[in-house]
Every structure is written in C-alpha cells, then in structure tokens.
Image 1 (cartoon, rainbow over the protein chains, first blue to last red):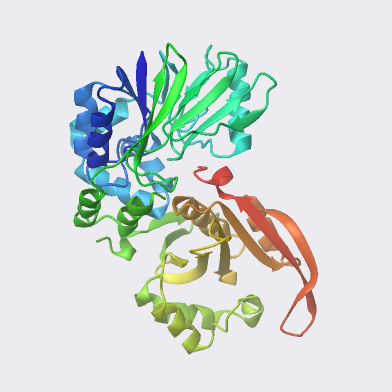
Image 2: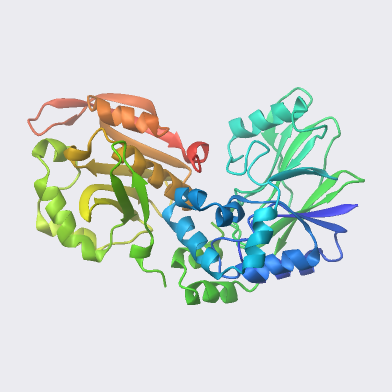
Length: 248
Length: 187
C-alpha cells in the first residue's frame, strides 16, 4: 500500500488541491498530520475538502487553538491574529471537526503526530530533539513501530537512528526513492503543503510504500498568486503572503 | 491589510499588572521619545544610539522596516514601559542569526516584563525563520544575565575590557546565544 503523508496545509486551498491532484494516481491512502487552518485565507475550503475525501487526519496546534482560546493567546502576535481571523470565519461544523481530531495516532504505516509523539506543541527540529524521540521509540514507549511521521516545522526531513544508535538526518535525493531498513528507527517529516519553510516555495509531501518500505518526496507547484491575493483581501498580515514566494 | 495595531496580545506580570505587547509603528514617535527621556542615564548607558537626540528617533521612524528591525513595545495603561527589538540581516553569513536589544523602565524591573518580551521575540524569530539569537551586554549586568538565561540563552564568551562605560572605564562583555528551535513554542 502507498500512503501519501501530507501536513501543514494551513488554509491554502490552491496548494491543497494541487497536492491532492498530484497524489491521486500515486497513493492509495492519505494521512494528514494536522494544521488544516491558520495563516492563510481558505480555512473552510480546506477543512471541507479534508472531510470530503475522508482522509485520516490528526490535530495540529493551530487546529487545537480554534477550540482552545488560552492556547491562541500564547501564540506569537502574527499567528494569534491568524487564529482569531480563522475563528471568526470558520463554520461551526468545520470548527467542530477540528476540535474532534485526535492529537496523535498509530496509523497502519507508523506513528502519526503533529509536533512530536510527546505533544502537539513540541518541535523536532534540532539533533538533540530527534535523538530524544528516537531513543524513546526504540524503547517502544509509543508502541511497536520503527517509523514516526511528524510535521509542524514545515521542513521536509528524515531523521534516522541506525543500529548503533547514531542519529543523523538522511540526505534526500531529488525525485529519488529512499529505502528504509526494518532494523533502524525513523522520523519522517513530509514538509508543508500550504506554507513551506525550507526555501522551496512548492508544496511538499511524501509517499510511503508500506510493502517495499520506501519513501519518496514530491514537490508540487500551485497558483501562489491566487493564494496571496486571498490573504491580502482577507486582511491578514502581508507577511503570510510574502513568505509563500520564497518558501521561508 | 492588517493594521500593525491589530497585531497585539496581552500578558500578565508577576505582580498581576496587565501589559499589552505590540509592534511599534509610526504613530509611536512621541511616546518612544517620552519613554527614553524619562529613563535615567544609568539605564541608557549601554544603548547603542543617543536616544535622547530627536534626530536619532526621527531616523528610526523614517526607516521603519520590520524585515530588518522588528520593534516590540510593552504598554501598561497605554503608557510605554519597555522597548525591545529583533535585528536581522537579509543576506550573507549572518542571515540565520538575529540580535535582541531591550530597554525596560526601571519601575518595571524584576516583574517579569523583560522575560515576557524576550519570549515573544524568540517566538517571532522562529516565525521569521531565524535559527539563532545573540545578545551582548556588560558582564556585570547580572539581572540581564539572569533574564536571558531564563529565556533560554547561554553564555558563550566573555571578552575582557572590550567596551567602556560612560566614565571611560573598561567593561567585560558577555555574549549569549540561543538555538531558536530549542525554545520556540514553549508554553
């Protein structure tokens, strides 16, 4: 089975549609690692599309902030502004859908979480953070799996713990396929659909082949100008539109 | 387009005082001048510019560019009580790095205001894609050392006699650094 793993759509319907179109004949299932809303201007469209497709979704911190006002207050002033705008514009049904999502789950292809298995707000961005999580995975704290999918950073990466316990990022070949070993432990981040931050403005996602144990990353272009126009028209901060140009 | 005044949040100091944090904009010129003018010379001696000179502030406001310097104000009952800023470089080997500068009204020292502002700047730095933050100040400013340590910075170097105070005496300078991703999003 081929599972498309997507994350951090962030109310960018143009990017979301482009990615769904790209994965249509490449994957049998879709796993969404959270943050359907926040930052961009099409929250209802994105939630409705996720609901319509019936993809397996888990909750991100921006999704959680919709139902937890105290959390929204802890966001930085830009992210907070976006959440307040989203809350005002989201339908009750769509808000309820986000609130009902689970924080993490053991999917058929591995452990799925937004920030890290330790929490929705945690980041796996630095070496020590990846090593701490991989060590716990090896101990089986979150169940018997050697694979964990995470998002939140908006940067595609694979962290690997080899049989000696050494942790390092795996080099991702352009349009290449990476084979995973059953003896090693992995943290896989597909990057972001709606707001990439790894200096490539294209939407990023990955496809995991559960039979061959391989991973391939996909980069998809979309109509950025349309998304940017909507952000400005909605009265959201210009920063959110500008960052889509450069992917940071 | 979002007005810069819509980008704000409230926080609580240790003594229960409510404080509003928001970016500085062009309408804050007079308020910032009044803030610096009421601070004693001892507080301003380590500031990089002569902030009591009106032309200095005029230039800041004329050149306001949030992609280079992000100025954050703290207000209590609409009165400016602290000014902190995140300084970025758009190009080159320091592109991933930003520096923080902060001035707090002595009336609000030891109340957690500095930490509140630094935490907000750390989260904003993460939002802006900054990887590392750096700050430098006189080693003898122990309260600043404690405040930055609390925010996640660690001292990486002390350079003896590098700076001079307003009396011409040599000062040891401490350089503190933090990895933004290690602390961003902590709640």
